[in-house]
Image 1 (cartoon, one colour):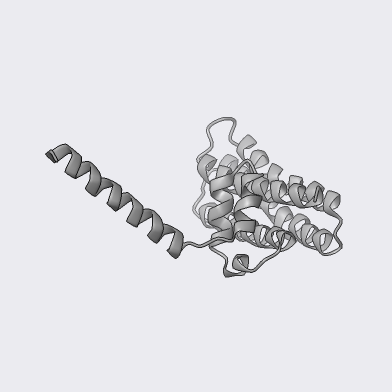
Image 2 (tube, one colour):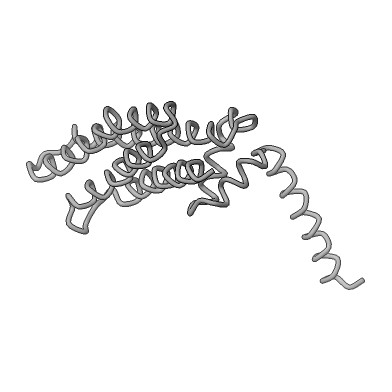
Length: 176
């Protein structure tokens, strides 16, 4: 066996060990994996669901609740960040931009996300998707305030993607 072959064999063993440890430390149910394959954000879906211990024993319908909880957390984090930035702003124009973003995210927290939860409990999936689409739109409204020069693009994208993933999950359970 030459040195290259030995190194390659060691590399393969290392990959197998790392992969098996990752699966063991971050287990997600087969149902969650199958559900996440139906979303446009498979990796985000799996990581989001695997972070919540409820996902190990959840039904497909309960995954939607977990996703809404994760979205709510992300939206609240964004709003808190915006408030912290707003406190440091001196220019009126920036104050208005950030203020609009805070209002948009506030509407998601106070109105749309609670409506999604209520609609899911009532198994009114089309209503839940409609309300969730409102949440998906909030980062875009915030971005629009900065006319293409937003310092919030990465954070807005993170909120958009988790909200859109949640919409995908609700859509998937509505067709089952």
